[in-house]
Amino acid sequence: MTDLTTLGIAEAGRLMARGDLTSTALTEAFLTRIAAVDHKIASYITVMTDEARNAARQADREMAGGVRRSPLHGIPLALKDIYETAGVRTTGHSHLKADYVPAIDAASVRRLKEAGAVILGKLGTHEFANGAMTPDQPFPPVLNPWNPKYQPGGSSSGSGAAVAAALCMGAMGSDTGGSIRNPAGYCATAGIKPTYGLVSRCGIFPLAFSLDTAGPLAWTTEDCALILGALADHDPNDQASAKAPAVDYGAAAQRSIKGMRIALARSWYEGPDGELSPDMASGMDDAVRVLRDLGAIVDEVSFPDIRDYHICGRVIITTEAHAIHRRDIIERPEKFGYTTRRRFQLGAFISAEQYLSALRFRRKLHQDTREAMRGYDLVMTANHWGAPEIFEEPQTIFHFLGKPSLTMPFNVTGQPAATVCCGFSADGLPLAFQLAGRAFDEASVFAAGAAYERATPWRSRRPTL
Amino acid sequence: MTSSTKAPTLEEFRARAALTGLVLTEEDIGHLHKGYVGLLGLMERIPQQWAWAAEPPHVFRADE
Image (cartoon, rainbow over all chains, first blue to last red; front, side, top):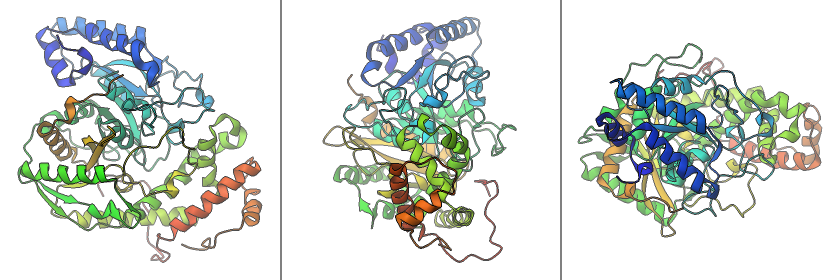
């Protein structure tokens, strides 16, 4: 049999359904690989060896008895370490929570377990999903498996690195301003920020209430679709939770995209604040050509300025994150990493008037984006500007003072947005684009992303560790 | 933006920082001043004039 750790979720599920593979064998393959290579990239904070073995044995017993809970039954996944897990420490990659052991699982973790997934462990993150990897934190920084000199992107750094390095079949991340799509892009995985409100955030450490979303990263778009299928549901314990109709995302990932209309937001990445690296620009042009060859209609469309979304989202995040962490920032500032601390402190200087203006601006940007999308199914744009930051370079305290975030528009609008790998630079670093759908139309996003992946060779290339 | 458009000097910022309740080192204040002034510059993109009754989303809903 081929290397079990590079199987897709759908393929592993088929093998288990036929009795050609057990969850125990699959789980042991991942535990063995984690023990052998994770020290090179430090993607795991906690490996849940015993819990994973027990869950795999239970899955095998159930499947042997003819019970098939879902496409995730027996599938080994991992969690960003801001997802609360009953009896297992949940650290937020912070000294503040280094010994915190929750009593119950986050709602999304509970849903994954009900779907039969095997939880392998907890993954490194930027501190509380907002800081950076700094040496004053209790766990080592996660490294990029494509080249450990480079950052893996964040804040769901461990999720991106672990999926790319074949240390789990999929991982949960969170996305408030791009924290799923940045590591997905820099690590060459797929990842989706679902529509705001589609997946419960109950039991996940918050960063900014009005922007926080939870979603999966996996090696393929199809695998992301299968994971999201187990997560999407109304949760009365999450005030933002929507009552959206159930959708078969796995089936959506098999749909043809012939005739699909895609609005290309080229002005966002060829604007006054900079241009893509030459490799990224070339990757984007090639991706547009592939989607057209698949039958999609791709037109350049004018959207609001990328800098408008960037500052709107940044004011909201800075203010809400300060409100959430204010008490600890005052009483125990030394417990935060030096970057995280300053980012959380900054919100104390934003006035109520400034915050409300950003919220008003958000409504306008939401309406203007929807208007620009009229007649189109998807928006397409670049995922990141070029190569990730190098670890040896000094860490920027306030990263928003650089180029505008290409991921922020879809946090501001709440739309679903996926990251799709579109090749590699001359240096071997991943390139990626985003596809965003209308609110709650994850199905179209999955259809286009999966069709692109099937038509290109990028999913056959893995990092060497 | 509105009343806070003018970038504060470091001294003005230090005085304001004293009112926040935060425990700040001189290094913190230096970083925060730089960050705040930068943020303020970016905030110039947010419109200053709104209809007086323009209502922000209380709980944002993507399907509105």
